[in-house]
Figure 1 (cartoon, rainbow, N blue to C red):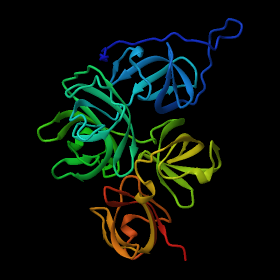
Figure 2 (figure 1 turned 135 degrees about the vertical axis):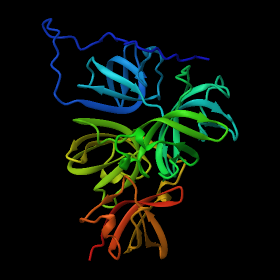
Figure 3 (figure 1 turned 180 degrees about the horizontal axis):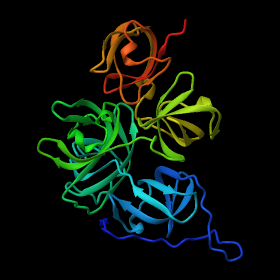
Figure 4 (figure 1 turned 60 degrees about the horizontal axis):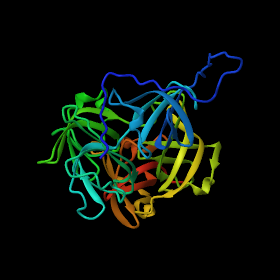
Length: 385
C-alpha cells in the first residue's frame, strides 16, 4: 500500500519545462490578472499537472500549510491552482479533499465505506485500503446532500489526529453550537472560529478541520473555512456539478457554492445554452464584477451524475407567501396545490427589491431545489402580472 507522508516546513520547487524564451531573455512578464483554478487532476508529468484541460507548472504543492512531494499526487485528486497565468511557472497547488480521516465499515453494503460518520459509495476503492487506514477523499456534490467520490488515497498524516469534512451546512443551532454536514455528520462549533458569524448559516459550504469522535459521531471543529467563489480577485475557473438552473437560463449554481450569471457574451463549448441542466458536469471560466459572478465560458463534460434523478430535486411554484418566520428564515407557499415550507439559505437570491422582511402576503415566483426533503429557495421574485 502506498503511503503519503506530509512533509512540514519544506518548499518544493519544480523545474520548468517547455515554453523557452526568445533570444535568451529569461524574464517573463506576468499579467496583472490572477487565476484561481479548481478541479480534479487529469494528468501528471514529472513537473506539472493538468487541471481542466490546462497544464500548470508549480513551485509549491501543499495541504493545510504543509508542503508535500509532487510525486505523491494522483489523478482525480481535487486541487486548487493559484497562478498568474496558465502554463507558466510559479503556480501554487493546494490539495482540496472533501474528507480526510480514518476509513471504517468498508463494504457494508458493497462498494461503500464510511468516513467521519458519512457513508460514501466508490466501486474503485483499492483492495489495499483497510478499516482504520487514514485516507484522503476527493468528490463532487451529488443530488440530495450526497457526494460523488472521485478518488480515495491512502496517506499518513497525523496532525494531532485532526480530520476534515466539507459540505453544505444544515440544521444550524447557535444555542447549542451545532450544525450538520451532509445527512449525518454533526459538527460542534464555536462561532468565534469565523470572522463573520453571520455568514455561518444554513446553505453555506464549509471546510471543517477538527477531532472526530467515532463513539458519538461528532466532529469538534478547531478550524472552519467558509468556501465560495466570491473571494476570487480577477478571473477564476472551476470544475463541478450544476446544482440549480434558473428556468429562463439566466443563472445557474455550481457545487452548491456559488451562482453564476449568464451574459449575452457567454461562450459555450461542447454544448449550448440548452445543455445547461441540473446534474451536468461543467467547467466554468468566470470573472467577478461587483458582487456578481459572470460566466465567460461554459464547457460541458461528457459525465452526468445518473445516480440520481436530478430533475426530481428541483421545483418551481407561484403563489402567495404566508407565515414568514424571519428567525428561522422560512415561509409557506403552495407547491403543486399543497402548502409547503420553503427555506431560505445562504445561496437564495432575492429579486425585485424583495427581502425576507417583505415577503408576507406577496405574490411570488419561487424556484429552488429539494435537499434532504427540505424545499430550499434559490430565486425569489414577484409573480408576473
